[in-house]
Length: 197
Image (cartoon, rainbow, N blue to C red; front, side, top):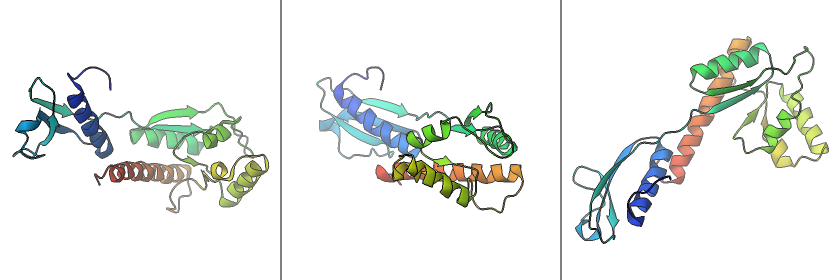
């Protein structure tokens, strides 16, 4: 939090309400009142009330509106599928990082270590457009090269939901459907952790 709200009681109330608002993704109004004037934790209009022990005796009403950046979708490679995922991702409201200078020669796609960086990072999900067999071979090689099993196991392939996709645009659509599923699963998990589901 940046700035000053007038005292520790108000700051704590706003921090708690802001965490709940972020987890739920919805705005809220809260009231902060002197503790001796609080009869219930909800006012008659349903607004959440927080107790304040500050000597000023003032009451405050605050609007908390969560704002989050659009999710970042990092795409490695210059293929029809990669370009289509970027286009679908932009339409879905994602910020796009397309590393398209990576050449595709029809037989091997090299990420110059970016794939390893993704697996070693705190990135939520790492998925690859490849067969299960190819991904298993890659995981085995990563383990042989010293990557821990937990990190290597983060690689999910094939990318996307199984919708029977064949064409690049269809495969991209299945990948974006999976991204949307992950986003909402993460949001719901955050709400459940804070008891707001």
